[in-house]
Image (cartoon, rainbow, N blue to C red; front, side, top):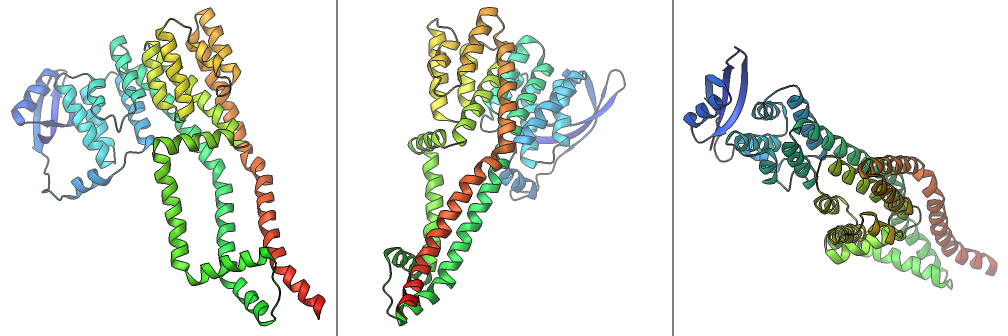
Length: 405
């Protein structure tokens, strides 16, 4: 496939520019003619060889979540303004600054020009575009309102993105405090403790067990600094690798659910994601079982995925949607199952789910704002216990020596 930059003119005299992939310029002439326009000029884009900067950028560039949100929102806005899909995609390709996304959009635009649906073209890039977006686009194409579906999915993705940012922001302060404490502790072990240990040795002081432990850790850090730092880095890498395995992820998910403060936020975050995603899909005309399958991919915690899977199996067997959520009130708050049941009784499931999503999004927003204040007492207790252990371990021998003088 070759890449062409072209200028075309519509029957009404409107001139526009575009970028497209085609096997040759004759195929491009045919594609543009089918769109109701004629090519005025075109130029084949230079590839710059197999090691061009453009190819390197597209190879190593990363498409962020925010760029996907902008893609869905801007594409929906252009379609709502009356632009043809192929032309809107061409505009998106020219506008994006991300080299990898530009290549992907160019490929999607080429598929659309050859007669493929947009959701089928997006489905070729499932590692980039989430299943939620592909399903919403398909529902929009089948319902004849693709622009509205893109606006809905962009709003949904933006809310999920904002929720994730709030949670990360709330955890930054505790993480910084812990890193600083560990750093100061290591410096004291390397610089301060050896001097005190030498003094204790010269005075033949009898050391308590806690002091021996501190001096032992200090000796290890001083004599095997590289090994100690390597062990810390290796331990962190091992935790990340373990978190990617199914058993490890399940273990971490269980831990987060049982942590004070964090466990409640995890439950409400998953309730908000489930409600928001399910409401968006159902209001767009996606059937319940397909919607639940997609929600299972959106929900990150494995324990909540089991509930979603049970709900899909239950609906397939003729049970109400709310049944699985009512049974698992240890994971989903009781309010979720009750609101779903009310929605089923009144025939307004999607509306009830939207209200649920707003409620739990507001709850998570409030709790994340207060999270630093809530976690601060736990940090103070941890810091106090650590400093107290170190102080007692170092001061006790000194006090005993002063008593013997």
